[in-house]
Length: 226
Image 1 (cartoon, rainbow, N blue to C red):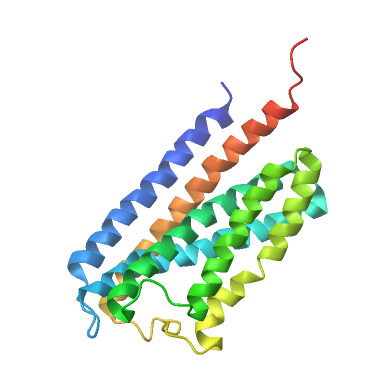
Image 2 (cartoon, rainbow, N blue to C red; image 1 turned 180 degrees about the vertical axis):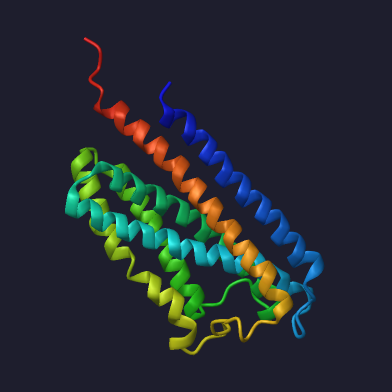
């Protein structure tokens, strides 16, 4: 057994353990320590899941674009696997952000869904990356699949600034960006802890998915027995 094979599982468990620990701490602080919001009351506590999941979806999709560009430049399969793993992880966080946003919208806006610019662009982003995964399944040739996925991964990243800035660019029901100056000090700590928790969990998901994709690629390249 190589040194790399013994270190990798330990590193993964450390990343996962850190993420779970921070998540537990952050959710405890958000649910029981931070005060209710002045206007929305306890409903606002969903922010400690909704906002970090939205942030990390954007980070994961940005990773897809970066590693897609690296693949097109170098044709290194490792970059293609990381781009794919990032896209799939980002899709999960994107779905979580949409679901928690709908749950939050019902008591605050009175409806589960509104074609608000932020919500609409977030849904479009989700569908773009679902299509990214579908594209990879419909192309059989390994090199063609990686090349087309890389081009599409860069194209889909156009949705990221539209989602991030839509609440500021367009007339929207969604509140504009919060900053440390606009958030009460008692809410900053659980929000930041949960953001780091989601970051470590995102890294772990990408890492694990990357290993699975690399194993699948090795299996595809192995010739069948005579």
